[in-house]
Amino acid sequence: GQEMNTPIKLGLTPKQQHMKTLIKTFTDENGHAPSYEELMTLSNLRSTSAVHRIIHHLVARGHLQLLPGQPRSLTLID
Image (tube, rainbow, N blue to C red):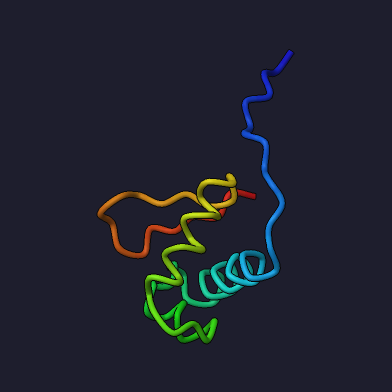
């Protein structure tokens, strides 16, 4: 049998779901993940720290992966 080693995903708030959709759409269209500045503009947030907070929740909830210290390293986990 195959081991199911997938982390359990937790539900998202509408804001988190919206951010996830923005990242997916941007990545599909541009071939790379958006920067925090781009996400801030796309999501009409006032600061990159607001973006950072949502990204942190997406990572913590198992929907997103990011490589520390790497720009544009946001990777969605389907």
